[in-house]
Amino acid sequence: MSNISSLPPELRAELLAVVGPTRLIEGGETLEALSKDFYWYSPVLERLLGTKVAAAAVRVSNLEELKAVVSACARAKVPVIPRGAGTGNYGQCVPIHGGVVIDLTPFDKVLEISPEGWFRAEPGARLATIETEARKIGWELRNMPSTWVKSSLGGYFCGGSGGIGSVTWGGIAAPDNVKSVTLMSCEETPRMIKLEGQDANPGLHTYGTTGIMVEIEMRLAPRFDYDQMLFSSPDWSKLLDWTDMAARNMQWSKRLVTMFQDPIPTYFKPLLKYFRPGEHVSLYVVDKNSADEVVASAAAAGIDCVCRLRFSDPPKPPYLSDYTFNHTSLWAIKSDPSYTYIQAGFGENFREQFQDLHAKFPGEIVFHLEWFSRRGRLGPGGKPGGDGVVVGGIPLVHFVSEARLQEIIDYCARIGVGVNNPHTYFLEDGGHHPDIEEKRALKANLDPLGLLNPGKMRTYPFNPFAEAAELSRTL
Ligand code: FAD
Image (cartoon, rainbow, N blue to C red):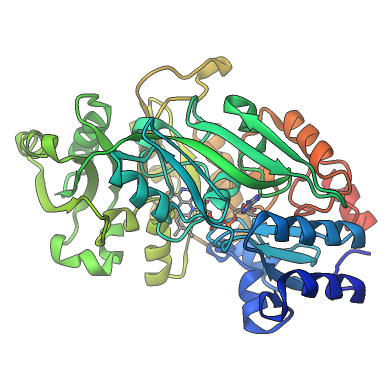
């Protein structure tokens, strides 16, 4: 048995009894759409995942419905794939072995926003709702993906890592950001466990393989009104030096520091009126009270501010964050489908690393950089990374072949550029998981039947749906 492509009749009857006919989707374009995410940025994942479809999808709106659906699937021994808004990039929501996709977006209440600076919410809650509500009482999200308008909280915790705000607060898993997560097991009688603080880390970014998140508590940051600004220069090195200095300046309360090498700005069609041909652009989102000082600092370095837009309350577009993180890749691929991407972390010698990559792969790599806080990162020798920021990013790569893409990734590793490979759907191959044993133990506890998103955790020793040949290849 390797693929559950239709519902066993008893399971179908049970699901119908729980969610009714309008929230059980058994075919058509809606089921196709609920079986996909944004894996198609990667030509490799497009080849591997393009035809995968679930047997059915169900939409659940509360814990009782979720429990009943999971219990029925566990009884039928059918795969269960939790899903938020489906904006993941690595086929995280794609059902490798068919089964039932559970759309959690209607399970979306923001349960509490504390004046003390934290919130509690259901997994389907949209990050935009939490951000808007938190801002009303003087707080904001510490970090959120550039998809914050659409993404769910649970999807961010299980599929994402950081984004807007991470230049100050680090990623989701950085110390003190997560207050708690409550996970539900996938069994005939589902159990709940609540993991607090850093104990929750093994359950983060595990693609829904280690339990279903049913409630999340996260700490908030003090709210700022921001100026969203674009800075432009034809001189890459000059703009890089200034942007790096601005990212490291701890006096300026900032939410986003991003840099785009020419021709990336030309792909941002709605912003073209701000740009000058042939120039590189930096994006800087900073407390409005520091914005004049930031502009003056850039001017002193010979760099022009070409756009300045306020972000205040209630939040409303335009959001310049719509051009950052994996939105940058999206704009580029829309303009030139030959692009794909890698996710890179550069060293303190990032200037030399850029030169090295340009020399080795001329014209093939175009730099898109993002600055991150070191909070919670490990430095050399596995020691805590300390204060300050690091330069990472999502460089664009002109796709030639899978072999060439691998050559680029391997070369990055040789020169000390860390790559989180976005061209695999295996959790372990896509990033660094020093706590993989804890993740496996959590999965063994909460998914004893191996039904949660099977096929995504490569080193989990048992996947009841894998063919024998596939098992021997992947273990
Ligand atoms: P989904 O894609 O629906 O799910 C993601 C994973 O979580 C899946 O494996 C799913 O099975 C699992 N899951 C969902 N809900 C639960 C639950 N309650 N319990 C257990 N498992 C669950 N990511 C970033 O980190 N930062 C960024 O800045 C960023 N920018 C992006 C820009 C674009 C244009 C795109 C396409 C993607 C970007 N991403 C980014 C990736 C993605 O948007 C985020 O990870 C997002 O937060 C995922 O939320 P979602 O609700 O869409 O989750």
